[in-house]
Image (cartoon, rainbow, N blue to C red; front, side):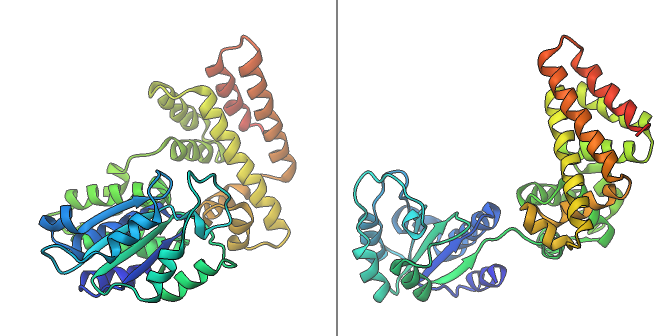
Length: 340
């Protein structure tokens, strides 16, 4: 839905009022950029664009006055209103009592020469409030939600297409595996790969493997993957590489603990008949992470995972309370994994 609205904006078809809300900051940022690029000319920015933040002391009265003002030497005005917490159930200390009457009046008859955009980075809105109901009835509502696995795959292909290249299916899976599901990181990696693949116009799996930056989380995942398959030498080499990159042993241990905790939770919920989407919803994580953890879960019994969690807890205690070498504590843990 949000991508479809971007297409309409690029074709100069605008709604008088937009409500953009959700927890995916990248989609919110992209929506703002599309509107800024296509609704008003760059030379009109100083006169016909304004942005208000209700958490920084700006008021609705100021914003509504601006929205009702005729554009100066241009076709339309663009007004952003950030952080409209009055649409949520959150109780915040306002510097002054919020007066929503001007907004209610405006929504009854929006100015035809203004694009008014509410930027609400909230997971949920308070549907019980009259102002929320009125705004959702009047505005074009764009939900900026975390993308599901299938949607991320589609989005990666579309993003590559926007950069002027195609991307192989295997390359799509590989870039998600390496860069994760953060759209900001993914977009940066796709743009970099598109430049590299300029002559061939095709991003391959080999290119992704060669050029995509691994996050520490991905390196820890690969480290566990090597250990799970009894490739302890390779696991240790990855660990030593992380140390050379000045990663703290305590941070590496925390990531190891988090990953094994996820493997344990996925295995436990899977044994109760939960599907991948249900597990993701229950644990409030992306389904792609569940898919990866499921692969590792098959290599362990419940008792083995319980023993590993206890060992990691012991490692944490030793790091924080003993004089043992921190780097060696994790090295010993990895070595013992092959004897699980």
